Length: 338
Ligand code: NCD
Image (cartoon, rainbow, N blue to C red):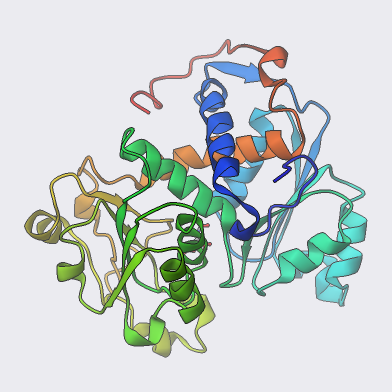
């Protein structure tokens, strides 16, 4: 694919060499994301960050990634704070806002809405999640993390269990589509029967030659995998809290279950937020000291991948180092070992 000037809406746009190219650029973002160097390559550029659904890390990391490349961020959050609350269409909003920004990152509760917005936008639009459909940048940062965690073993032949709300979880939808670009993957899909992975995505995995198992039992499903990818019950997609309550807390991974059932190096991932309420706890806090808990490495890696996407879409990937210098403030050791 050609990154320059393109919208990033779906994993369907990517071929394997595109992913490899993106990851190579993400690796080169490390000195900037880890605060050893600063670059001004996007000096003067504006990111319009439009988040019409709750978001902490995606919104802040898109914004910070843009800032780290030297650009500025303008934000809209929530329908009530925007003219959409006055009945404005996505078309009009896109026409207007694309005159104010050089690139837009957007999240919206409706499936297909970000693509509809992009069709009217005069600048590239990056999908930060459209309803339960897709979350392509999360899948890319997840795969980048998997590649790093497996330290050179590569993605082919990966064994992964995805656990939780696979019906409404857009991160696992995008991740499955991304895994279709690789070879010989074994996927165990663990969910309540009502929250199974959409059949079209299961079909896509099988058509790619991958081995897919579906299960409703956590313990037996995490025995022989490299990655356990846990997800939250997407309560905002249910018609009532009571309905979500039926599924919350169904699959709980904690240290004793991990010790008893997982191979010693199994990596634990989650797109976050994990639901830490007593009724849920899909990933218990007692895993926090487990060195294989990769959830905060995922969020750190997200910066690299989002910086790389901006650099490629705005066609400055080869100029980043030319506009750079060392930082001159105390940066601590928070990125040691990454
Ligand atoms: C996810 C999302 O919004 O889909 N969060 C994120 O962006 N990291 C997962 C979730 O909300 O459960």
